[in-house]
Image (cartoon, rainbow over all chains, first blue to last red; front, side):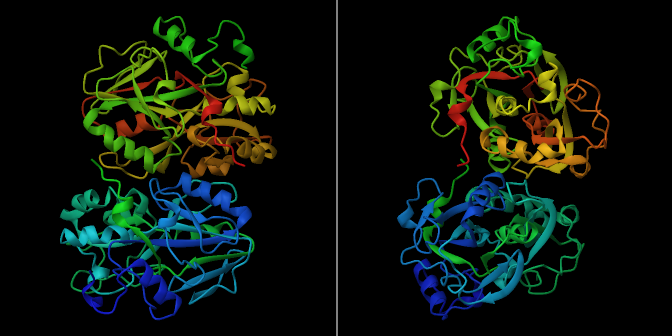
Length: 294
Length: 294
């Protein structure tokens, strides 16, 4: 799918996990294992997991919950939250402590380890891992409509931004805000991009805002200063000029939101996330979860 | 439950609907038919119903979808969206055009008829009715904890407010904002009120904001100027003094939000809602839908 990465990329979820575990794949996962569902990760102490599941229930656009550990301490077996997808189909031979390419670690809500390759030494018998849908899942559909996102075309990590849009609180998770991913398109393509991504309800679905005014409404001041990922480029790989007539930013809910929630709520103890852009790739196929809008 | 209404109030959902239909119950439904689920109503042209269902999926706190017409034009038989609740249990001998005490009618997104008793003459074979959870469903639980909301104590309609908090858009439903209901409590009771209402996930669940700063964050300027319902009172039935130390407002998602969405999106054609506070009472018991947080 990604022209910059047509050779030697993992072809399946199992291969992506295996190569992440052996540290022979060490790059953002955008465009790899086409057709396989990718997932954001957040790992929490068990007594906070119930509130986090409720946070997902109340904020399903940024936090579409796919699965959680079967019980505290279980890094291999997961319970599916996706209607019609059995537990056994999530990921075989799974070790969520090693099977993402890179991880972040938080202590008492502060980032203490950034983009490390494994987190088994931070994992405890009390940890619960939660997998959240990822908007990479609809990039194939955009590509097939000749609307390949610029970061895919140029092999870059997707730009992600903090916003001022609040999450609806759930238990200990208060005062948090949405994180968004961004893709640049011609203004005339906004409606078709909305239509293509709308059915992907378990992977953020249609955009939450678009256009330069939409960007300002989200509290984003400068498109060239993302909080995570690479600085955006246009389809020609050139830097993005704000307020230019030809292109507008389109924003989707982003599964980095749970890591922002951990920081905002100053969650006590050790929490773990994937490094933004470096996802866990599952055995579930995108078609298994696509709820077609007809 | 409500001291001001202990006599001659409908005891069941069936009685509430029957008396609404015969216009022998003509008041807000707060506190009537204790234990029965009450529902907000929005009726839309069929081609917009799909986008509305998606709006509910993306914004489940203000818009917890309970049921929709089985097919366009059906005002009697509904499909349940509540896990474990069969279609037949929603409401027997149901006529959604007559079984709420009062209705609002919108044309092209503008309110044209306010608080009328029946809407059968506005109903068409193309209309789809959608039932949305109502926060009255947790008022029994608050009452049982000696935290009876002031509007219940004094037989008043609940105060409801527009906010500046955006809904996440879905198809034609854009630029909408949350509507909230409000109950006054002592600041020291906020956490127990949050805990009591948290499990009611299909009926708005825990509050989305609280306190005087929370009110200002929602864009509400004056607690004594609600957009729907009655001006609030405190537990003694006295008017509420803003910024007083003893009491704080607590805000929940409100099922009037869909009517605000109809107006904001200027939905073409005829749409119908209940008159705020004058709900449809169902046959479903609150216990049937309560997802306990244990």
